[in-house]
Length: 158
Image (cartoon, rainbow, N blue to C red):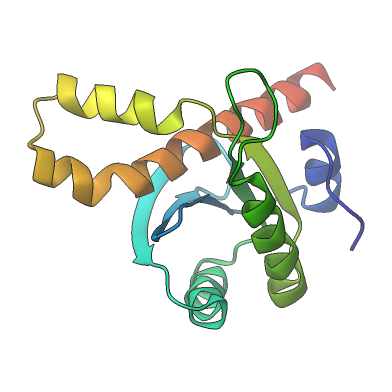
């Protein structure tokens, strides 16, 4: 599969079907899923990271269960626009996912995703414990929704 560099490349490689959004952290991976029409991202689950093989096995199950046609993975980017210190690890994770799952993978700027989600949860008066349990998958949905919105704009603009 050719390298996916942009939303346009992603849509060309996977023009239809549900998409999985991932927010990979050092300890967890937040997971969100889109609907078939790619209009809405919904938080799905958070998996505790272990070894890549176990993480990939769970992701593979979700891909099969939901008929996923591609992945959007949050890429750590500094406020300056430079790749963050975790970017190298996320790039390696993406390469491994491409090899293991055989699906197109789009990296997506995740700048401020967790901060935005945390603020919304605080505004909703969620307890700290509830926020901790849900923030990773909600951040994955925030990341995925940004990509879905871009896909919709590309479709509108032709």
